[in-house]
Length: 265
Image (cartoon, rainbow, N blue to C red):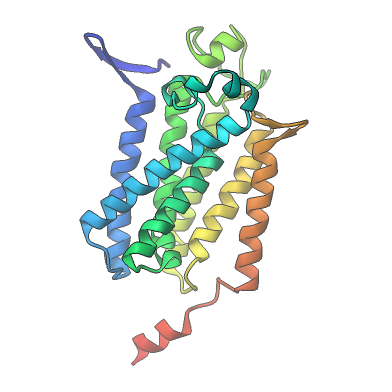
């Protein structure tokens, strides 16, 4: 694998950037389909604006989260804080920032957040799967050394290869890619066809992804740490617990009787 897809003179087209573009294009197509299917009052242009808000909020949140967990370095090198092209984005921060930005936009438009969140959730997890393939080609978000037969030796010019030259590593980005694709298929092919209250698909996405991330994080070599604890595992458990509490206290899996009765009439 190689992080650069091709070069045009001094310009490099990298797999990582390409996967972000593909993720946004595919996600926007899926979200538009769901918005129309659910008759949500957003035009195609407004859906694209929502995606832009979410992406920008996600990048800001992901960067701030990473900076907070590496605060000593960034206090000494404040000019590096906005330098996202040098690496350093955390998915949990991205989720928090993206969700907050989406909530602000939907509030301005008068659109119910939870109903729209259910429409967005499958596209989000699919986009994360594309992103993990970009991580794989880039050789980051990598795992610890392993003697398992599927361990991968990354190129020496990659982040993983420079840290562990010539050593097979857990391909944690592929572990998470498979988990994310499985969650997408469950949300898209099964849950979205069921009767449930608004928020069930989104809360299920949050809970399932958090459990998957908790497991994968055990094999990571580049985890952000909160003292002796892996930050991503601590945050994943907390988020999964909150999502499950919301699901069970609000009984989100139950059908919305108002919609059912409206269809019967």
